[in-house]
Length: 146
Image (cartoon, rainbow, N blue to C red; front, side):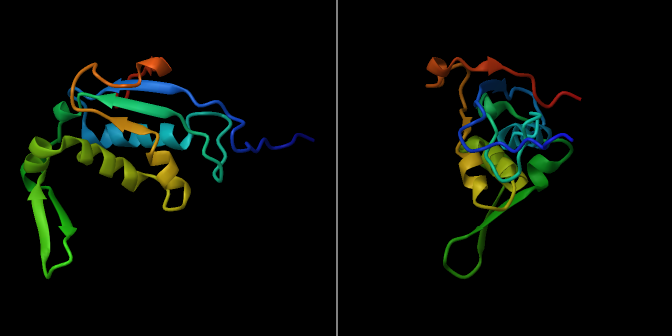
């Protein structure tokens, strides 16, 4: 009779990965990142324990949308006053492209207390190779490949 492995907090080592967002489709990239943050790419995945890894994504300002989403997709938010504020994906990509990827990954994570901890392991940067995580020695990983 074999026992099912259940990971305990702090028992599973967490690796660092770095991915380049140049020319990647937003949804495909976000779903791959969400799987790594949850730890579903490991055989030691446990739903109630954070077994995921850290992910650093660079060149987020060069991610792409398919079809007409760049002009038709609207991001809306509530300000506290009557009515909603909204902007298109083109405007948001020009002003704060980090939030596009961060929000799409956040919506793909589970809706529980672990989601905030998982999302804190995602590091998103606009520029190329400039990020403050060189000391962690992140391993390059290819994401959003068909």
